[in-house]
Length: 332
Image 1 (cartoon, rainbow, N blue to C red):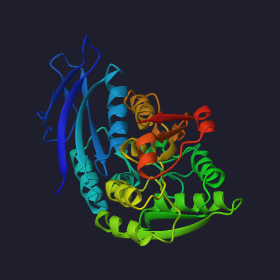
Image 2: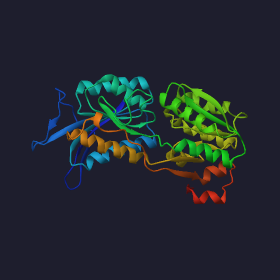
Image 3: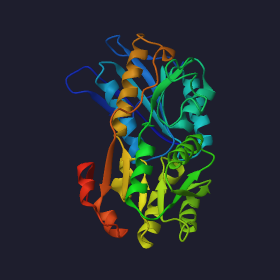
Image 4: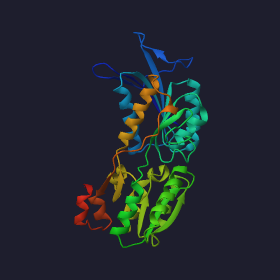
């Protein structure tokens, strides 16, 4: 079942107008006009699943458009973690002839791209746009799609280095959905980063979020720590991994800051709202006719920080080292 709502954002006035739940599509699928004759752009928003990081990216995207002075009607749809639903959402947006599609995640972007080669698509939270076949190159995307990636080139190497230098156990467990191309790409990066260490990888794969707890439990006795990358399936069931880690005193490393705040011990990351906002700025250029998607290079996150959860450290029986304070931020 798809979950969605529509919102009208009229921007450029004192106090942006935001009407939630009352937008309607024109029967001919064309953009509507306001009473003053100003064009209202229709933007379809497709997101793979509810999650704090993805939600922040969507809000960042909307904020950029709201600050642009454009009038925008958002049609927001959530695939509820089912990749097949992204195809339906994309097809519906194409049938409605929206002016632009904002795709939040790799599956959502693939669903949109499969539905249309004409409507501009701006993505975010995509780990490997090139490997997923979304763009021809990061500098010159080609076609009707561009956006922002959630891969900071230093994030995984720094996390692996932190584990290697600060923890005695050498077996690192990972849980991921092998059907998610973005996850496979990240696991390859983890393996590459581990080549210069004595760390070893213990892999557990899942197909759905219902499999995650059992996968985490399968790592007990095999893994000295667990590292959760930004896998949509696993992150949507993160609480079950946190429970296993807490119950068995297993350090839990994560791939983004919101998962640290939810109970992961430590992770390198950035604000997903920032990459969503940057994607929104790209969308503004496209809607204004200043640029085509093919003319806008894919953008990377600019800031990276290490966040440590002190409460999680206590739950997992981890001693906070004094020298971590010079390079990390902490949450309680």
